[in-house]
Amino acid sequence: MRDSANDHVPLHFSIELENAREQADAARAETEVLRKAILTLAQHLRMDFALDSLLRCVIDVVPYDLASVILTQEEESGLLFVARQWPEPLASRVFIDFKITDNPFVQHIIHMRKSIFLADTKAQCDWRVTRAFTKARCWIGVPLVMGETVVGLLSIGSVLPGSFTEEHFRLAKLLAIPVSVAVHNARLCEWTAIYEAERAELIRRAGQFQYPS
Image (cartoon, rainbow, N blue to C red; front, top):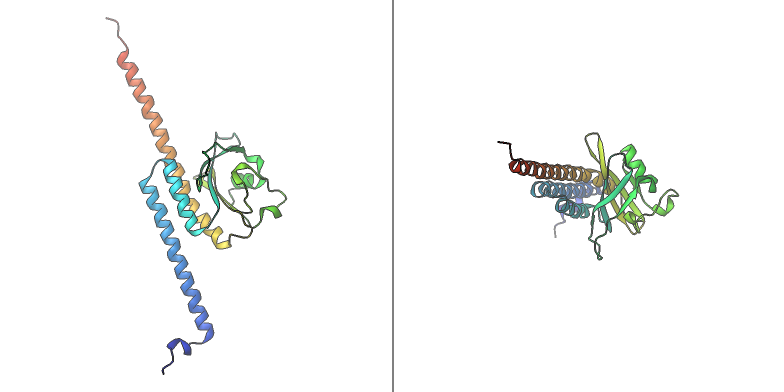
């Protein structure tokens, strides 16, 4: 009976080979998630559709219990609101808003443009529970940046401490890029729609104007 070729491979080479295979599998999974995210951006310009689809993409690589896209309200107002969250809550969706100062970690993300990974929120004396982060024991927050402006943050939470890894943290920061683009594109579409509506109203009023004979 002939031995398998792998039986003659030194142990350290087998370990290196297995590690390389795992890294290749992770890279393929990451590429597929990014491909789906880019496809989502191409298919949806409406913010609700785009963000729902993107949050589904995130869960493929960062297995969360609840993730949210939280956006700034009026500039310099210090207010945030939950634009979308996934999975969809069982009860009817309610408007959730809060102040940046309600949670020091959120304040740091918005003002310093720095991502944060908390393995256990209960171990952080500065952590403040708000309706936006209900039951989050393990939490990742990533700023959503377009140009020089922070438009909000991507919030990813798990009910169990230690659920996320440094690799999950890296992927969350990577996936925040298409989320930022989706928010930017959706806002541009909204502003365009507002402009078109105002323009149509001006044309209508001009048509009703009667010049003196």
